Image 1 (cartoon, rainbow, N blue to C red):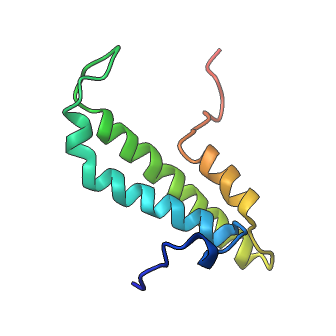
Image 2 (cartoon, helix red, strand yellow; image 1 turned 120 degrees about the vertical axis):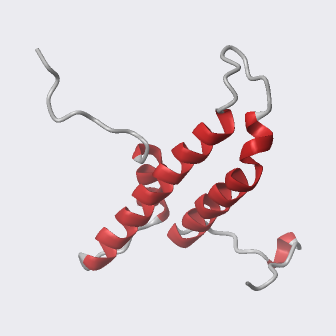
Length: 102
């Protein structure tokens, strides 16, 4: 992996779909790396030692959804922009039942 410049002037001034996906992937990597440390925190109101795991699973599900959205749009001849990827990230961990039992 290429070392990215830390100089602000050397960085892009726009955020595109690839940038949003890169950010999400880095979040998943960071959460995976620090999961046990986060789990060890006594997080109010429920100190159940799984906060890091829950954060990781949630972000991983969001990333899976966004990567799928990007592939779907690209394969369909379109191109996912930052907005579409961000929306997919926001909807990623959500599951909606097909029908609510009456």
